Image 1 (cartoon, rainbow, N blue to C red):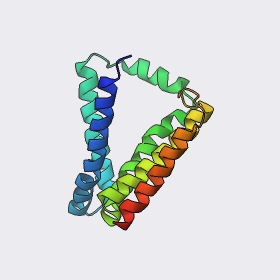
Image 2 (cartoon, rainbow, N blue to C red):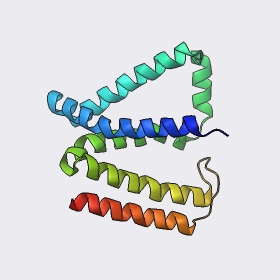
Image 3 (cartoon, rainbow, N blue to C red):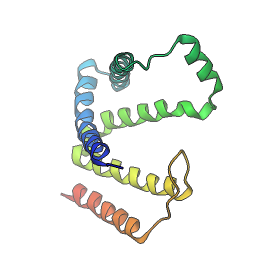
Image 4 (cartoon, one colour):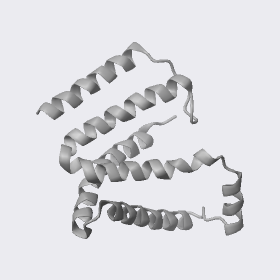
Length: 151
């Protein structure tokens, strides 16, 4: 499998994640509400995704969507809730910690969680053991987060 495109999109997503808290924080200050700013951010994202889905022909009928919704387990809907937590946390706390510190701790949380998800092969991730290389990488991330916060 060619990994070039997935790696490029991962890097671009990291770039976007570094910029998004600052943009959303300014929006929150301007409209004087972090929760409303998060709502606006999700609304704009929803509209953009709907346009893309329509453009690439992935829009489904209302009856298909309703039937699909009914067939899903309750916890499948928590992805949007988790996204709201991430966006609101970034909006509120990135300005307090600083962009670099917030991203460092964000990445640390992602890597710890990802290692555990892969260890047990849950949520569709392939099962992968916790290796010494992963533990060293995790240790370096802890050190990085600490150094970034100190600096």
